[in-house]
Image (cartoon, each protein chain N blue to C red):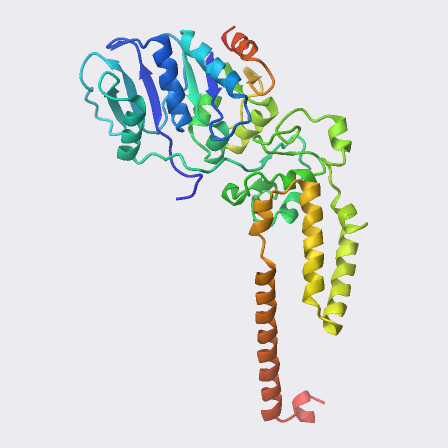
Length: 291
Length: 104
């Protein structure tokens, strides 16, 4: 099961008819411990509105006068706080109902402010972890929250419109604070990738690609490439506030060397195979060429 | 009028003293409310409970920045209505300010 699947157990505090109200301190303690452990809690009061029930499993918890009530609904459970501890009861019912468990995942993923987003796709092309996608209306969307690297706000920093939020980020406006003109202008906020790469982005990429092809064809120097990679990663880390953990998930120098070796071996095999085919097959005649 | 309190369980970005104080005052207020462990988590899961919160009449939400809350609901597939929703920011305001707005 993905970290973003499953239903949470909803705990309803019963303090109305059939129950003895909790003391103020006890109610706060129960609420606090349940929320700290990832449960959702409703405190209903007669005549006042709360969110109506949905299809999530429910635990009714309180100082119940009678024993557990009998219900036909398999997903509604009663526990008496005079007999059980609130957290133990919630954990036990969570097991019984198969409700979602709290895990170590900090819900860290980009949230798009569509009032600012211009659908430029910079975030999609920038993110290395396939977090972004495009929906059937060709609109940018966050499709794999699970893939996002905790504490990495890099995509929001390359967004030219400050349209990407990480609500759990420390600073504004990435955390959802109001976007001010100064934020848009601020260099730390609006990193211009083209500047990082030196001028026109696509032109630079084409030039670099061409230069790289020539360089590798004449003098293939892995150590230089790795040094350059290290330098670039250092620049990105500083400019985009990318955590070390994220950089560490990128392929290591050894991985790259290993891939390069595999690629070389593959190329050699392919060349040898081509040579063999050329040796055994006679050159095409003029008729075969259609001359 | 519905009240929703977000505990921001999975991160420490809301000052602990503020959220504890808001929860304590709500708990002692005699007011009905829903408390969720973490709105970000619910949004990521597209939790149907978000719809129950977003639907209906006036809602007051104690959480973080209003822009973040608005787009978290949208990301969860349950946009908040344009009117009748007030988001109180526990990252920026004191517990007393937040509770005063929640209960008024």
